[in-house]
Image (tube, rainbow, N blue to C red; front, side, top):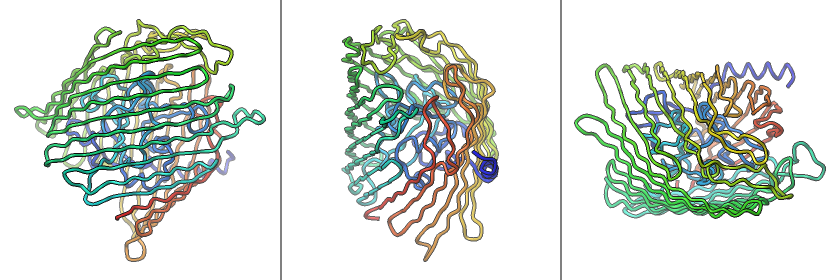
Length: 598
């Protein structure tokens, strides 16, 4: 990047803010409105703000989330992951309407199969407290709020986006009018042509990718206090090409089903997930059955949150000519109590624990207190012992000898692994609903890492300390007939874990927008800039250079349609999130959303 471009970029920082967040209590998100959650523990992006962007994949949303670091090993569709607050990028970190959405074999999030047509808000829970997530094995979570059947009248939307490399998304959904019985169906499709490989190899193109998902749900609401939801989802995708190795096709096929019953503060759910991955190395097939019971209520003035969940997973795998059929089961639960004291005090304390068929019993817990005033000022202090259970791959994968056509390093599991442990102290401050600051100190023990080479073996021997802080500034208003927003987010790490790759020394994210109603106040025209600057990042024994990127978005509402145009990486910055894999340079995206029956 030349000097003039760098000056332009940093001038933009002064006017920008972190993208699209709003105070958590201002949203209707599932978890962030919980009265026992402290004001600094959640961050929300609403449907109105997501509507400014052309969303191809979940990664387009991750770029908007404060406190989230994400990476990708090549073009869209290749292996990717994300970390919240510098924690491990493995574990149950993605929820859909509060239900875990993960690969039962690797414990990696199934981000590629989110029904993006129905996502109406996204919230980040920085601590991943079990009393809201309902799971012990969590490193902070992203919860996607997905619309379900029901509503004032029949509702439907059609969405289309198009960008570089023939990247295109087509989505449509329809919901019947809200009544005692209502239903909805959503279809999501994303496709892209291949990209040139990196490093460049003559004739090789990578990332020919297509993904499809169909989601159907049925909701029965006999009255205002109870409901029954039945949901099924079928999804599959195909990605062709693996950087730095032979071309291959990687295919996922999956089927989910769930039944959930709500009555006042009681939620019962049971579901199953069947997921298969096929590639040159072989096949991994998993079948998981899960169930949970959650209760939220008040007893003698004390707020009570409790849950119990279980999982039974079986696999039929064949890798590099070796067949192995592991299985496991776990059951866990937790209880949290809290309340409200004088002078705006909120307190809570909780324990969670469980048992695993291959792991001894495990236990975690937390305690915290928050003091707030009516003018929006609050302070909170929390201590916690968080856990992350080993995945089936880390436990059971046998020592494998790669065949000649192997396309990745062979790894070997270890049945004696212990859960990862993270002991945290965090201090949060909020000033008048416009400035939020968090500081945290975390000690990590039993971090699971790969030791050796081909096959590398998983061992739970890592230990590290993490020290960091973050802040968010938000300002919104109206001036000369324009609505505006100026926000800024800063994240700094004094110490980073050597076992979580890609965490930046610092990150500044920002966004500023202007919008104005036109004609008879029925149409809206908007423009916004989004910015990100990240410091150096360590990936194993390699260092990644700092980078700065700037994005431009514009949109206009015309009757029941919204047209959007974006230029991504406006300054054509060259940067990497994983060593050896350059991210996209400057490119454009156009899109339109049309709401029927509006």
